[in-house]
Image (cartoon, rainbow, N blue to C red; front, side, top):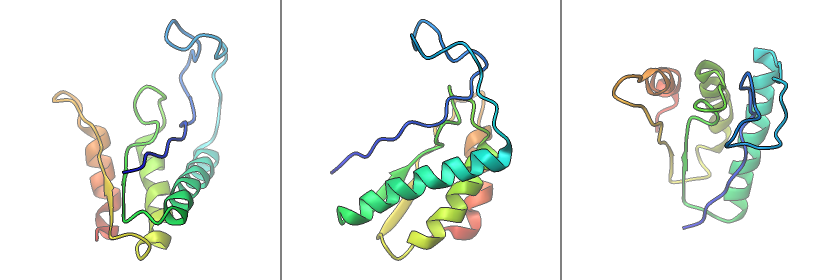
Length: 119
């Protein structure tokens, strides 16, 4: 098993805090279109590395939809747009989207958006 990591865009209102020292104190403002492009570029890079390493399966998540405040609708759409090009590259592409008992919006959004691309 290999692990590929990539930082998600940090879109928090106050990115610098006790857990993220030195990260600045100004919020980054990006449009949904810009976020879609950023997310697609990063996901393509992750999947290209997995293809290059001849991985059989990849497990992805709701990239940045938690603490970094990325919009799940935009991130799920980016995933949908990108994974179509990689369906034959892997035996499986899975999404592990965490949700607490009190908030399942990320999970429901990813399930709805990715439903049409399910393998």
